[in-house]
Image (cartoon, rainbow, N blue to C red):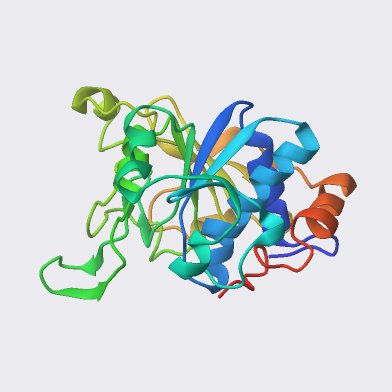
Length: 269
């Protein structure tokens, strides 16, 4: 989905940037190339920088062991040797990087998955039976940690009935569990998923932890959403249109933050 004025990636970037909190810290994973990279890494990376420049907030980003890397000096390849040489404010040992979750320092974890259910639980382990899967996925890596400990998570997904499923093949990260109050009952400290950003809509969660559509992107319809989801869709009573980027937000993205399209056009290897 794109409009005559801005791309889907730019729209999502602006939407995410407006949600970020002053004084917050966000964990951004290191995804694969193409569209998956744009959704999971590119959008949150540019959104954080946009929030700093446009809204003047103090927001720290973490990529594994690296904190607040310089986007102007982003390597063209995200292999480990290049990442470790990426100029940044700070780096920590691998053994320490997840401690920021466990100590309650992480405001938002940006995450994704091969499957999500109506309560925001995620699967990045396998499609089909765990013992004899149809597809073996990358695994949770740090996902289980930041979905457990972060104040909240933002999920970045492409809508497809094979992705938005009524039941996960494997649960690799806890969303809002199976019923209202599950996170509290299980003693899980973080707040769970707050928003799901997709190619068609922005989803939120009600007080019981059930997902619902809050806004539709330009050109998307209720029918489009229903067709691309494998469970019953709930639309918010005040369903609206996803707010468009402003000219200044687009200028900052295109001219100052990501002029070469490394992040939003997935030109990083």
